[in-house]
Structures are given as C-alpha cells and as structure tokens.
Image (cartoon, rainbow, N blue to C red):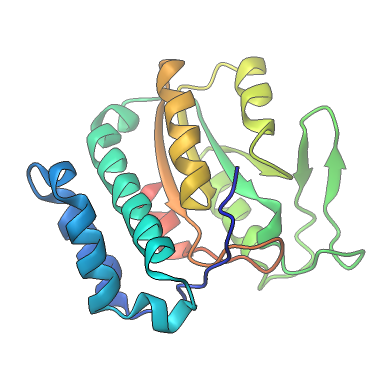
Length: 204
C-alpha cells in the first residue's frame, strides 16, 4: 500500500541523498534511526520543500534509510544472481493517456513499452534494463509482483516504487529466497512520478 500522502523530493539538494547513504552505512544505525531521520528532515528542510508535516517527513526519511541499508546488506548476494527482473511503475510514463503507445498484457500483468517518447522515463529505464539483460515489467500496481515471481524462476529482483512499497516488497522477496535491490521514487503520486535514472544505472 502506498503512502497516504504525496511527496516530491526533486527539489531537495543532492547532498541529502549522499547523507542518506552515509547514515545507512553507520554501525548500529537502526538504534538511532528515529533521531537521525528527524535530524536529516530538519537539516534539509524536507517539510518546507515538500509540504509534509514532521511525522510524515520523518517516516519518509526512515523508509529511505531502511532501503539503503537493505540494498547494502543484499548487494553482494544480488550480484551473484543470474536471472534478474526489473519492475517499473507505470505511473512514471510520460503520458498516461492514448498518447502512450504501451500495450497492456493482462496475463503479465504488465505494460510493454512502445518506445514512443525518447524522453519518457519508462522508455529510458526499459531500454537500460534490457541492455543489461533484465526482463522488464512496467506494472500497474505492486500486487502484480507476486504473480510474476511465481510464474518465472528469477533470482534477482530490482524494484522501482515508493519507499513504503519497496519495504513491503523487500520482505516478500526475502521470504521467497530472492535477492533484491531498490530504487525509491523521488516523487510519488498517481501520475508523473519520478525516479533517478542515474541511481537505477548504479543498481543494475
């Protein structure tokens, strides 16, 4: 289930994301994450830039740090996997109407990118994933993940979604003996969501 609030971190300075990574690498960070999350939220003025209240801002930062920690802990085992899949959110498409040439496969269930717009984030991410040997699915919702994973023998999973969905997805993946990596959305919502292609390149 996604957050009950929308956020847009695209206006936050890049040092914020570097600081997130540094905090996630610290020893015993889980014991102090609440205080550190509040400190990061205040230092980088998350409330001011996003309009979130302090509890929402802290929750968001905590989840982002949690994802960094999980990525780091599973990185080596993930790199040993062979058959990998990339899950992308359909809400990051440039167009959400008939201008988008993606076709939908209900058996997937997934959209197949039609590569109609070179500047479409999903087009770029799909091309990148396939060039790295990944099977790529553009999902209408997180509930599709379990169906796909039951149908195909993937070992490694990369997911792009809001951080709350990534946390829940990570638990599901771990229970099934898979290894995952995550790229959180920097802007959520029902349309025009955004994630960093550069971050995805590093993860893949």
